[in-house]
Length: 64
Image (cartoon, rainbow, N blue to C red; front, side, top):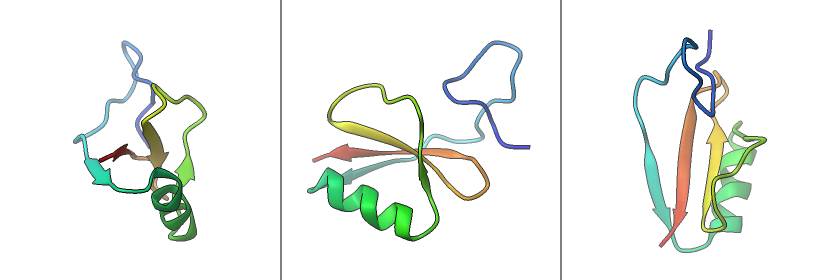
């Protein structure tokens, strides 16, 4: 069962927090999606994208 993101009290939490710095946010998102990730429905800010791996675990790409 994948964790819930954004986190909610009493829900399954993520196991780790992975942040990746990238020079081109749009290109990084395209590459991650092509590899099987999905863009999370909620995004915290303009220079960060939260993606979910194929198992549903969140990770973030940040504009460098």
